[in-house]
Length: 189
Image (cartoon, rainbow, N blue to C red):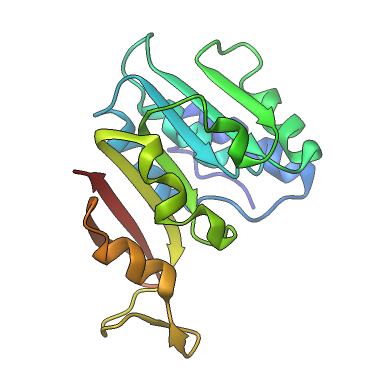
């Protein structure tokens, strides 16, 4: 698991930290490039729920355009949060918390919020809708592309995906980032 040579430095550092920590569950490069692109359109405060070793955070950071933008990220596992903190130790624009995602409730509203669809369902649309500013973006990754309605995953209706795609507070689209992976991008109305 080595990082391709064309990655931004901060992302390459995140891969190295993940490798040392033995952590292999992280944001795919295809999703990461999407995060960097979206982060380049944002200012204010961005957030991530479920840091892991900081690869997704690093992708967000690689897209930030100005010194006023901040990223706050929460990881429940203190060992992983500590590893992610190594990447951003000298970066005043990124704050890594060893905490549950709910500790970020008072740090918004967020201009961009990155969620892992594998997180518990309490991080669904109702839990985060009011955390995103008007015009703000929510990105959820780790979906398997689906061409039917309602969306099916592992032989069941994918209720999380269905909720995001039908919630009137958001305009949401599913985007394939690879042949076996899709991401939801939701904009707060």
